[in-house]
Length: 342
Ligand SMILES: NC(=O)c1ccc[n+]([C@@H]2O[C@H](COP(=O)([O-])OP(=O)(O)OC[C@H]3O[C@@H](n4cnc5c(N)ncnc54)[C@H](O)[C@@H]3O)[C@@H](O)[C@H]2O)c1
Picture 1 (cartoon, helix red, strand yellow):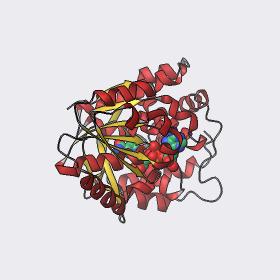
Picture 2 (cartoon, protein in one colour):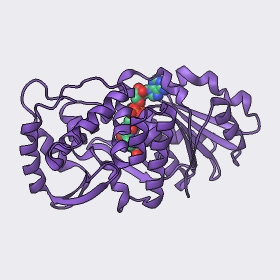
Picture 3 (cartoon, rainbow, N blue to C red):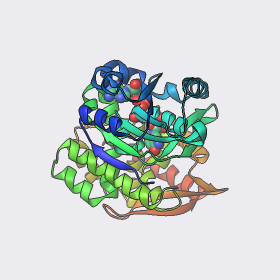
């Protein structure tokens, strides 16, 4: 089933919920989001002909625990869920990963829709149906592919989002600028925020429709992420910020520094000031980064890893390298990259 993506006001979102062909609606919402926006929904008052069951999940990543999953699913089952119930996730990427996983498992899977509330979730995590919770052995290790029926985006949510979270989402927008010439041009032409968000979300949706299970083209969405994930852990960076550094280092290692100027220009247009490398003080944690990279789940077999590179703006390519090759490239590349200022 393909996902329908719309940019909607709060009123229209409530209208869409009212029109769902289900008599039971399960709402799973991020605690912080609910404290800020519950008056915009008042679903129980506005929708009287459906049973509405709420689960307020702890904010952000806290929701993605196995113990939360158990509590939530048992509570929903206790209150009466059936196969035709429709689940709605309201929150950032963590919440939609969690709620989507609940939707994928409860009664062997029910329909669900997402109302993303962070920039990162609007352009990325709400779309595509990768849903997961965390294991003590790592993030997102317990999960499924379960695509939402609808993604309803209202950018008014961004008004309450912290600068740090906006910056992280902007990192993913920068990634799309190198995957799609149209998005690159839109940013250079300083198009409005909503237009850019819509273009990024639709770009991801198109890619996912072509390759729902990440067997081929969908891998391009991981541009910047191989090193990004490693940097996120090694330097405790926000996800999208780490992705930008992951792209920058790849430009150095694989493109002889080409596209770094473009990256800087795009970054400045999107309101991201000069940025020193996360390893600013002291040595680059190369060994740490390599060890995190080795554990990354994008490793496709015993000793190779799929790497996304760009051969031009809007021209991503996927290459398979041996881990040894990548280790050597990263070692030499990171020594040089100490001087990059984005
Ligand atoms: N499924 C995917 O394809 C995919 C892709 C990328 C990332 N992810 C996942 O997404 C998660 C990160 O998501 P995120 O960056 O959206 O952050 P998040 O969901 O962790 O939210 C960050 C913080 O912002 C708060 N928040 C959310 N919306 C708000 C709003 N409108 N106003 C004020 N505060 C708000 C939350 O309570 C939380 O404290 C990670 O768990 C990551 O694994 C999933």
